Image (cartoon, rainbow, N blue to C red; front, side, top):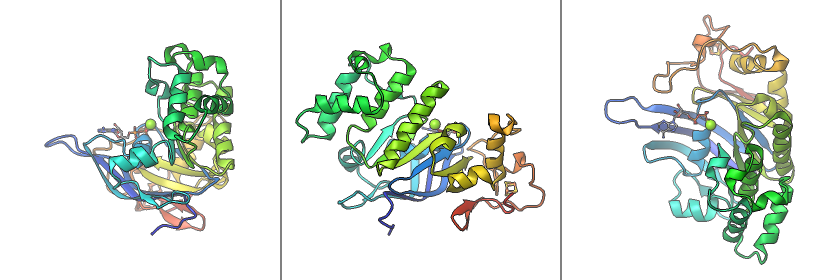
Length: 318
Ligand SMILES: Nc1ncnc2c1ncn2[C@@H]1O[C@H](COP(=O)(O)OP(=O)(O)O)[C@@H](O)[C@H]1O
Ligand code: SF4
Ligand SMILES: [Mg+2]
């Protein structure tokens, strides 16, 4: 059983997608383990297509029927029975988990807003459903809008009348409508300019400081470096490095983490040569090997190995 100091404890989560007879499965998530404690902001970073969104969707039961899951993901609901998310019936996920215990800021948030209702109407409705004892949902919706830095004038607008940044703020407010102790934010800064990126991630950091556990999924390592307390680096469906963010940014051990940092402006814009492998045809051993500048005779084991408070999947940490 998992330790209750964690709000969320994910153990060896794997997701495979069946593509049909005769076609290989997509290995979207492989043996991913991590936990989230109150006050923690875990940045989950990695190139596009490595499995970040599938991981979040798996935790909330939002994957399509061709997905096959294994592993364990326990949500330790404060003052309530723990929920095993992967095996939970849809009724538990929809009535207890989504919105109430776990708020999701979905990827491409604007596309998830209902086009025929104003932002304000959607927010009030979410509060009404998720906080049924609340006497004044409109006042709560206004407070939420203020909380996320949303000018009240935008509450009267329809989604198509909102800029990308404003729609993202509405999505964050919606994710907070049920006052959840865990927030999963999937690329909440995509398409935003730098000042808005910083305001958005600073808001997530505030949520963590209030005692929530926050998972920030992003391919924007600079945004993660600003606020993450912990960092998990994903490559080709697996975590390859995990640990305190300051240590990973200061001395990355995995050559892929080092490569991601080298691609930042502060690292000299040195892109990692090559491309990630197809998730239908992953190689044996370390999947980063074809792109690794220090591969040689390392032997390449893909399993994460613990070194104190850090974990790395590389035989020769750099
Ligand atoms: N329903 C699905 N059926 C088959 N493959 C899928 C499905 N959803 C996602 N995938 C694949 O899973 C992999 C991981 O996708 P995703 O989690 O969206 O990546 P990321 O969020 O890291 O960019 C991709 O190769 C994607 O094509
Ligand atoms: S295990 Fe080997 S190939 Fe893989 S990242 Fe480490 S050094 Fe490179
Ligand atoms: Mg994604």
